[in-house]
Image (cartoon, rainbow, N blue to C red; front, side, top):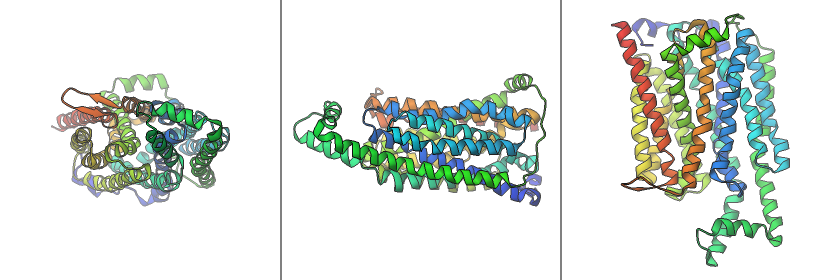
Length: 462
């Protein structure tokens, strides 16, 4: 995956594929929006549904990224037999359906129907990512494939940024739960209720007959605020479905009859691909944990309300977006694996500072981690699929399956937060700080993958 002078002269996207490239790149922004309007919903649901814990609220992420794990392999088997366009259409249909299911979920006012809706929504995202990533790689010269994917992926943060803005300015800014429970907390504290007894005292207070109506009205209002962006999103995605339905896209794919078991065996013998799947699992886990719990970190360590904390998330996404374009440019001159190694080490250092500082400086470091994460997903993806030929179709599904990391690590981080404090010997960490030990481990794993693939490439070219 190293770069040379000849590679830098080859067009990343030729005129032949330009229109199709632009249309498919829209999908990258589309699933970016879904990812990053959903991350802050962990905090939003926890505020609205007082009966659930931080670990339970992380079921939002478990369902969201679990949907990828469930559907990635079936999606890959589907596009092996049919076309990329068919995979995109099924993905958009499932995406729209899952988003529109927020409407009946809101009617029930039962938290656990929302993760079910997100689970179905991400069936669609699994189809889209399993299809769009290899499709983009195929749109031109193999020598520029990783750069082309980085360019397409650079538009993913635009959707993510819009999702974060909607979450901050439309959802978190307008839900009433935070102020509602803050007022109750103040009142109960003034009556002498201890901090340890507060959670149960609040639950008892809102269930009193005199208070049930006010609580029910607040809950209905806030659930409606959470519901509306998803219903609108479902309608937008349905419109894009019809745009793709009536658009002509280059095939770049023929139905094949390769045996998936034989293909899987070859993949598991490929150390580069196996390492890539492991690295991708840890990367997605780190990204989702950092962006999901930045709100909790800023709240506990800096005293920020959710809306203000989410503004820091928006800054993180802007940094991520700018860094993605910068890294795409640098990859014309620097080896992709070497750049991956450098940035993953940088991510580990910033995460360590985030854990130990536990103040606004730590929050700045947490935001800075996004600069290091920006190139990781497409670069790991491109490195892992390098030279796989037809096996890349099933191989890409394994890399999308790796998104399951985003389902598991946030639950672990939620557990840390529920512990309140963690004693690590030389210092006591707040749970919101200790949660980032998990992303720290992830960046160490990614740096090992980057270094090993860089060394392997140097040996091959020696």
